[in-house]
Image 1 (tube, helix red, strand yellow):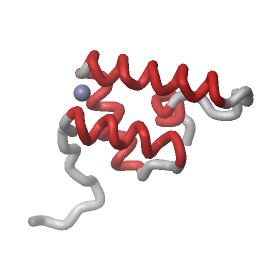
Image 2: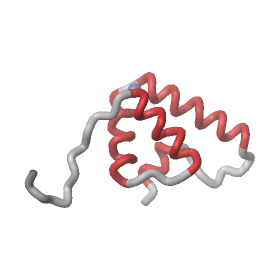
Image 3: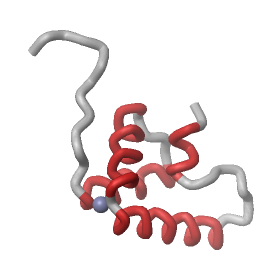
Image 4: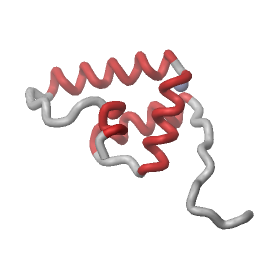
Length: 77
Ligand SMILES: [Zn+2]
């Protein structure tokens, strides 16, 4: 394995992706996790739907629009 700063982007499976989204609700994901998640969401409509749902859930629970969706957060860094 040759050293390098660029880590390989692995495809997440849906289970892992939804897990990351749930985690992203409560705490920040690592940079690699967010990239992986974004990649997965680009290609997986099912997980995009799931992401939208938990986003709505979160918004209905919290009145404060302080943080957007996990997807939006991907771009804010
Ligand atoms: Zn998926």
